[in-house]
Length: 98
Image 1 (cartoon, rainbow, N blue to C red):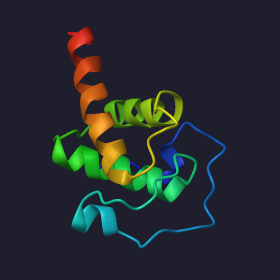
Image 2: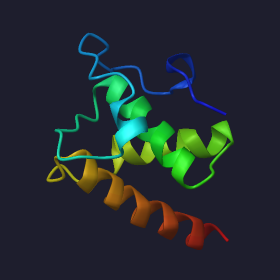
Image 3: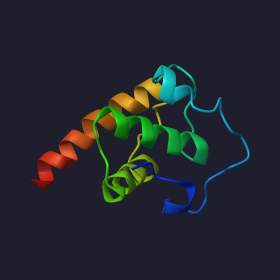
Image 4: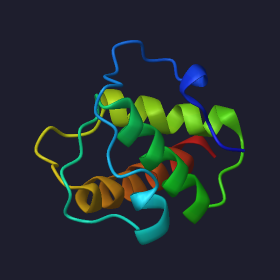
């Protein structure tokens, strides 16, 4: 399942600046600047992460949105550093849950 803009719970995303569409999904994370408030980038990160870890439920994808929006450290700037943080944070969240 691919999460869509309409499914996101956050309401203060910017939708004006669309990054190179699909870049993250085709090339993977890079040193390109990541902005958690850019809705396009947030969706792309959730979709890429979900494809790498076989996450298919909207509940889990919304958990990723929540993690990125509320718990992502402000010092992380690139897609790559965000992806690495999300990998670790998601693994810890799943461990704590089960």
